[in-house]
Amino acid sequence: MIKRLTWRVATVTEIRQETPTARTLVFDVPGWPGHLPGQHVDVKLTADDGYSAQRSYSIANGDDGERVELTVQQVGDGEVSPYLTEVLEVGDQIELRGPVGGWFVWRPHSSPPVLLIGGGSGIVPLMAMIRSRGKSDTPFRLLYSLRDPGQLYYAGELEKVMAGVEVAYLYTRTAPPDAGRAPGRIRAADLVAYGWPPETAPDVFVCGPTGFVEAAADLLTELGHDPAKIKTERFGPTGG
Amino acid sequence: MGIISRAFQGRPRDHDEKLPPGQYLVHDFPVLSAGPTPRVPLDRWEFAIDTPEGEVHRWSWEEFQALPQETPTVDLHCVTKWSKFGTEWKGVSLDVLMEDVESAAEYALAYSYGGYTTNLPLEDLLDGKAWIVHEFDGEELAPAHGGPARLLVPHLYLWKSAKWVKGIRLLNDDWPGFWETAGYHNYGDPWREQRYQGD
Amino acid sequence: MDQLDYQDGNALAGPLSEIFTLDVTTAHGTCAGCGRRGVLAELRVYGPEPGLVARCPGCEEVVLTLVRGPKDAWLDLRGSVSLRIPIAE
Image (tube, rainbow over the protein chains, first blue to last red):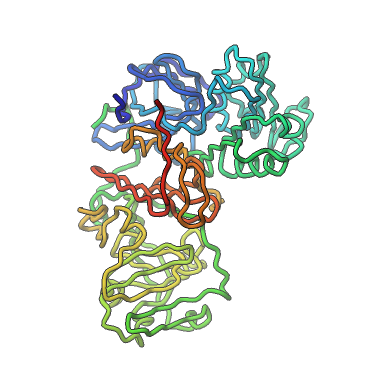
């Protein structure tokens, strides 16, 4: 029988610092029903006087039993992200509800090439797709736009050569000397150089701050990509 | 109540007799949006009051600016629980705008550039309780906060203070507005904590 | 920046999961304002406070609002002609 989603208790089992202001939280969630890459969860924090606050976060890992990973970027004046990035420790408990969202998902049995375009912490659900690719022979290309090398999430994992996954870094402000691309926001030339041509009809997933997603989606349609093949996840001005 | 998250405080809960129940104090000026921010050029801006009897009163920007101006200092209470004390505005009292309006109407519907609407009893707009304001804190009112001009009705929750106000329609029958038809309280008195329908 | 303060309709998935057992964000709907067809996940969502307001990406008319009080949720589909909701076998 189908039931409405309920809040589940999630216990922190591991914490990995991704950048000075972002970290990955690994949770054990008894009863977790599994998820598709690209889905998200709602997080609920409750204070001892009953006050509670909720936020939504993309899931970072592939389906893996009762294990759920979130990567959280600290957003200045929020009340949830500073707690998740600075206070929460291994062994602490919060509540999760999910997985939710059936649109911005990649289904591992689908066959067209995959083009992932992420801006800042928009990499998170795209990473879940890469991690879910497994031994599939679907070729992936990732365009990862980030301010500077210090903002890179999943550094060790992305830098390892993954067969069938090509990664291009688009630095917007400061690029390493060997980058081979002047720093700047995403442009049509990036999509031509590092993306798939429209004729290959890729499944396209774009995630990031709203301005970034608008720009990338416009460039894609100008280049001739079918808007029906472009799925987007805009998370507002900052993603807070 | 769910499980407690260790050491989670959330935002501060204040206790101040100037705060209506359930509210907390902010020092910035949060912006909540229900849609794109309208941009209204002043040469095309107009404010109108119309009545069920068929009267229409209109003001261009210049005519509106030429009316007697007041500078109310008021506390704001948003239904999302933040309050802001001592905000300083400049604008025209609804008493001035209503001076020549003859009507037996008892209700008002404020409507805005961009399509927003909110309803309130006409008496809540009169007797020094409401203004059409165009300056905040000595500066022209920013579009994010409702500029060029917004309604200001500080004794009700802030959603009643329609941003980008375009006019007020006087009505014989109450006509619930955007949030009032979407679940929020029809009147919205912060001191009686009238947040949602049924409160 | 204030023109870019919306999210995609994907953001409705969690709040609507309190009401529906199926994922309604993949439902196809028609905008009552302009007749544009699309899935709810492609709407432009403003909020979450004071309520979620989902607008048509074509004409910016309000398609759906969702207000969550402490004990009730109010779902208003004022700008939607009908929804075709996929129901898996």
